[in-house]
Image 1: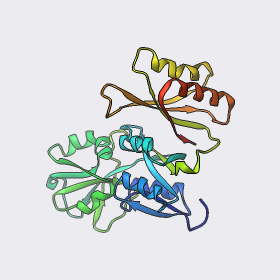
Image 2: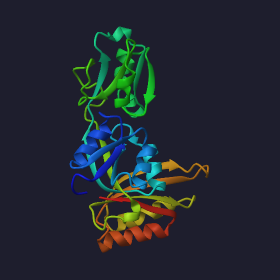
Image 3: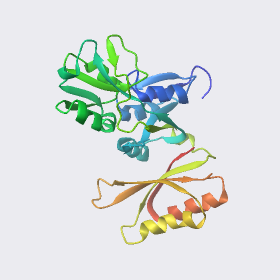
Image 4: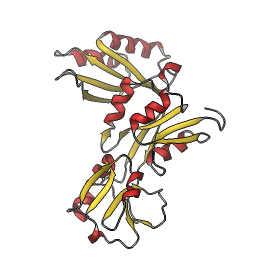
Length: 268
């Protein structure tokens, strides 16, 4: 991405963690925002943006499942990643007291990451999911609160003095995406791929054995059910290694040969 003409798309509205990540990953780009993750992928595929930025995993809540599924099926691949420290604050309209709050709005992941605080401080408040943390700002009234990032600044809104997350050492991994049709990056330090192996004893062990035999470190594995095939799972796997290396390339090819479905989702 070069020059001011480049565009990056992410989940909005303004003030979302995704927007913050996009400004860090694409400092010279015009930032476009969409209402949901599917629309973010649409904008990338249609050429409305040159790059897209999505959250893919949180250190507390785990994988962002919708984005794992979208990355598996859409014309996109990860070409860079970053980890952003997450600092959640409770947002209230000026003059609203905690005792007035009957509803808490935020993204599902943010509410999950602050569940202990909500159980203790607002145990009777209804928890309502929004498309993003920043979206909750538009819903604030005399009886509601939101959970937003500490970087948010909004007129008439007061943020809690401290991070309300259950785990203060909280990070979200974001991917910078480009269109898969442009080609996967030729080199990188990490390969992220999805795989479906036969539904029989030892098939997953066989899939992973080639990496172990070549001393390639496995840094992540997550399973997702395959909707159309009950009882079958797709594995999302990340390894340390440069795909330009003959050793890594051989391990990936061996893994591919053991799978009914295999797709490299990113090299970064």
